[in-house]
Image (cartoon, rainbow over all chains, first blue to last red; front, top):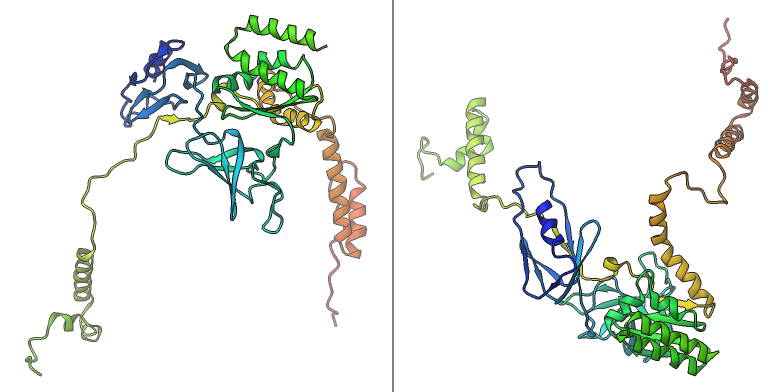
Amino acid sequence: MDTVHARFKEKIGEVLLPGDVFSFRFPEAGDGIIKTEKMICGPGLRRNGDEVLVCKSGILRHKQPNLYWIDSQQRRYVPAKGESVIGIVTAKSGDIFKVDVGGSEQASLSYLAFEGATKRNRPNVQVGDLVYSQFTIANKDMEPELVCIDSCGRANGMGVFGADGLLFKVSLGLVRRLLAPQSEIVKDLEKIFPFELVVGMNGRVWVKAKTVQQTLIVANLLETCENMTSQQRQTLFRRVAEGSL
Amino acid sequence: MANDGAKLSKNLLRMKFMQRGLDAEAKKLLEEEEKRIISDDHWFLDLPELKAKENHIIEERSYVPCEDLVYGRMSFKGFNPDVEKLMLLMNAPKEEEEDEDEDETVSRMETDITDEEMARRYESLVGSMRKKFAKKRDRSAITKKEEDVNCNVVDYQPKRAFMKPQD
């Protein structure tokens, strides 16, 4: 098993292109001396029999103990199971809502998938509402399905939100930077003024602050810090903080 | 009948009423023949055994576990207190995992009672419940038993049963 991880380890941090192949032969199942470990290939890597193929161009990253993935940039979202996204309700048909999540097709959201919803007690969802929900089914063969409750039946903040505020689109890389555990962008932003932020993994961000002007400022800041270095960003934020006071 | 007495068909001979006269060995032979015929009729696949391959590589499509992304709803400087509470709730499990590695000592919430207090409480609870459901005669026996502090079982009189009158 060391050979498996060794092949990957020598490429960590390097740029890989689609079509690169990591192939290794696993030892026969007969001898139980060598314990085979599981290897998890994340986004950008695909399994093909006993080989691992790279299908996106980017940098190979690693997380202990055995997770590898490709760090790449894109703007188009592909639904993945378990991710929380912001959707816009486009249609109400019978028992389900059709929600636009920015993928190749619209996702369906059942009206029973809200906290405290029963057949008599329908949730108050209108066309055009914003919903924060999670994917239960999201693969290339089926229509994606969303739910607004977790496995215990609690909402956990999911559901309809956003009476006011502004929704705009950013790239998926920026979304991941915003949602990183110790995100610097978020730390810099929260010093400016109080506001509320909802980030969907499909590249949609919703912002709400006390006044319309502040909302617009935060939205513009988020859109611009995509292409700035951290130095430029910090100087910009400081200027804004001084200007707004 | 078309057949002579000597030439009876196989199926006829296999019937139950014709086998009553046979001995055990002949019966066993006939049974085995029947089983063979039945198992020949069963269909089966003549393929080599295929073992399901163990997959050592697991595919993961989402970025969330890769980079440990936090909960998507955020609120700053008290703009939305509900969301701030949610943030603490949803991001707390991750922090707990980190702390577990650092200190593995007894983890106690402040509102919990200690183990000793719990044991003491249970001791008295068991005794009082037993008294509650005991019959009147046994209740006094139980109280007598409890008096011994060293937990030695005091030999008390056995339960008085009905004694038949002797003439």
